[in-house]
Image (cartoon, rainbow, N blue to C red; front, side, top):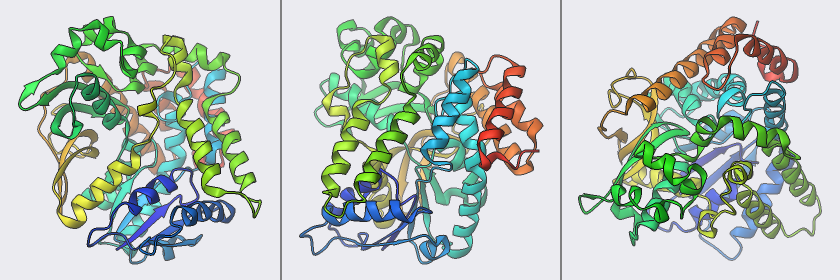
Length: 446
């Protein structure tokens, strides 16, 4: 089976390949093709994978190419993990937004909109090529903003594109851990929303909802990442546990101030950190796997550091530093390729699951996965406060898709202005001006 990874020079690729090395069952991936526009990055990541596979005669064969069509032909699965504009673009997203006093995070608020506006046209082109060159392939989308990009691609690939994110999985795992559930896979997680905008409303073990026990215990609530971020009082008020990214909404003023006062934004930190890694890889004697693992550990330890500092949450727990995208992706791929039925929280088309959204809207929800793809599970309606946020952000996503399709600057301004975290139409206009000035990928807006 052939797996093509778009963005194959990216930093998360060794996590995926490491997961593939654990799979020895019949029908496993035997060929991995890495595609990236940057040949030097491809070379560096290929070295890391070679060291991962050292001594393994059954390791999937790895090839690398800068030719997108060659990479796609004959693929059974396509992992899309591209970053249009690179980390320099992410740093610019943050800088421009913070200068206007609004959030620049890569998937939330102004930064997420800017990232989406330059990513959607590229993602649509990829989807159209997949439909033409590998019509039987399944696309697993890692590319952020994951829900928005998955919806853009679904207009050309239908249900054969599925978006993934490790945030809901990590949240469910942490809740299960503090509740003493020995095997998180035995728990049913009642989670629903959009990507980076969802809530855990229940966690059932052997048919019993254990979440009320957690919400009633302030000590337990304060013992894990989300409890530290949001505080027990707010979680008890909500009667649910939000995805960590909702910290940007519920504590927006504090988050913006923390990012404005930081020495560097998250994007600038990652840009500099990864530039150092790729620079190190230019040395023929560099130990690629050790350098990558050291860089990855620092990356994970500093994740959402400003938010945790604002909340007084302290350092991340060691159990939360091991990643998760690759595990979700591998479980999804196995379920489809081998009909190993499983349940995963995924980004898929709504199909009536959330009645407040239309059938084509991509949502993040538990899905039953089999050889025919991912099937969203029926869920209870969201409470009014959550419904309001979900509908508002989905409306913004639709304006982004419309702007990307039409090239309308006016529609792009509307997307920014309608977002709950952008507080002025004039700010929205200035954001569009500033972003089009720094991002070649947004030059199509007229």
